[in-house]
Image (cartoon, rainbow, N blue to C red; front, side, top):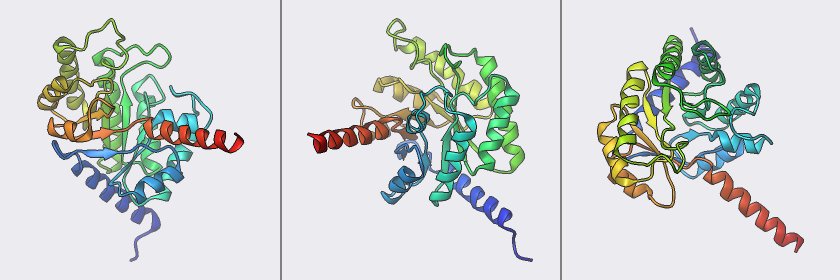
Length: 264
């Protein structure tokens, strides 16, 4: 009996999810040049990408919204579907805080993202608007619910748990060993809850990155910036590197510059 379209689609998603997990190698990191729509995804795929990742900030901006779950979830999922349909690569989606405070709502968002073709997501531990970092137990419950739902689909969905202790602490919070120890504690708690990766934006001190890569029980994802090249991060045990909103900012800065010149 011939396989149905839905079965074929699930098998393809399954293979992509399995391949995506294998791309997280300490010292030989997966590099994600983040996209915001189907067109940008195709451009990045044509450049030789091994996987596609969205940036919530870029997706929101591209649709006329601010970041922080202000773009309607339905629109974000429609955009995800278009991206998945436009490329033959694994696609991981930035779901911000999971579009819901309670574990049940987060689980529902995960389920919808998987149904749309995603093989992974980012899940932040801050509260929208206030940007306060949730307590560890609350976030663990959210991750656990997401993991349980993902596993029920049969897709080895990659939950990239984002920890924002370094990102939203402000200048009053020193980036030191004490703060790193808190992140390490969360890394272990998040891993036990079912997270597959640890994303720590705002962490840019190489010595701390190196320590975290060694102490984290799950692959470390770092946001690349001008102070740390891909090669340096790779040499310090990072397994995944994201460009975040930078591709969008650079592209549209160039567009504005060209437009100004044409009107000059």
